[in-house]
Length: 188
Image (cartoon, rainbow, N blue to C red; front, side):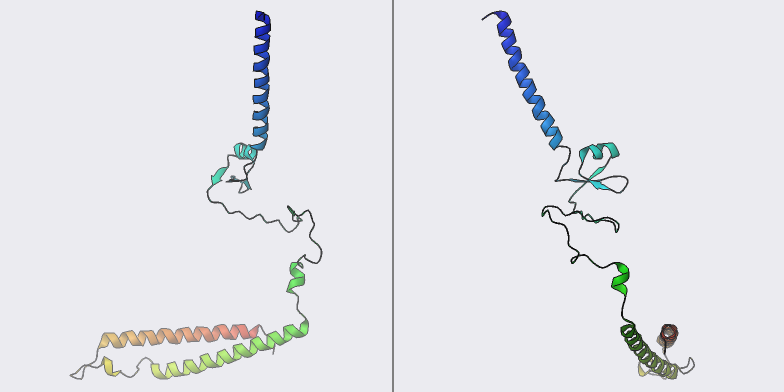
């Protein structure tokens, strides 16, 4: 074989190897455009696995990412894998339709809510009466544990109990005011 034939044969082998390598590199580059095993978060708060987008937007890899993709209200969801489209029966009603209740049902609910609020208001008012009676205008009776053997009084414990009673009275009064405000929202 001549030198020219040998060079041509070697170059054709090299060319074939190069062509094979180039085609494999091109195929792997096409496959490597997305990485289904990794998720990246971009500065615009979007998520992607498209490597060209990752480089263009300077996205960061998220470790142990469990990402759910939600569609916005105006978009129709994409069904992946089954090839079927969602039926109208499976579609959820819009927010306005789901929130609507029959007027008679709403009236019953309002009456029940009002009854519960009135009952709670009565309980709070009874509690306030008991608290005010025990408070005795800031001079409640001394408890046996607050008395000393010689007839004296443990002033610190007594003052602390009086302050707690005053706080409880204020809380009960605030509860009563809140219940009265809520009752005004419901018709009689």
